[in-house]
Image (tube, rainbow, N blue to C red):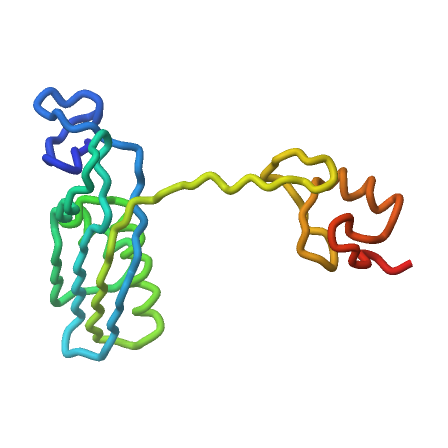
Length: 185
């Protein structure tokens, strides 16, 4: 069963929701745990606060304020176990994001292993869109072609194609730009 992240309509397939007009983007959200508090307590307690930052609406010229996470604050008291599988069952479906639940379950279980309980565990979580940027193209100083697959020249900071560097070093042991000695004879 899939759920629209905006209106929470449920369907077997996100593409087939007759009452939902939202476009589901392929932008994934990064889970950033901004603050964590682990301390001794009288009972096992988990508190999670979730916010969204910089959410981008596709096809819009203005940046809207981020839509709130469906469950912005979760407080679980008298938790029987901090086991990862048990925590995942407790967190989902209260936190309607399986990826977030898996990450938090792992983090909670890892923290609980370090300190004997009972514990109060608190996380401040921020969800941010994952933004992929194309790496900058650099120019090989030997053949003058742009590429993302350039290698650092040993002993200097200049970059070249691996095959260009090999050909150059067969003729001389100096960098073609700064003339630094690359390899000692």
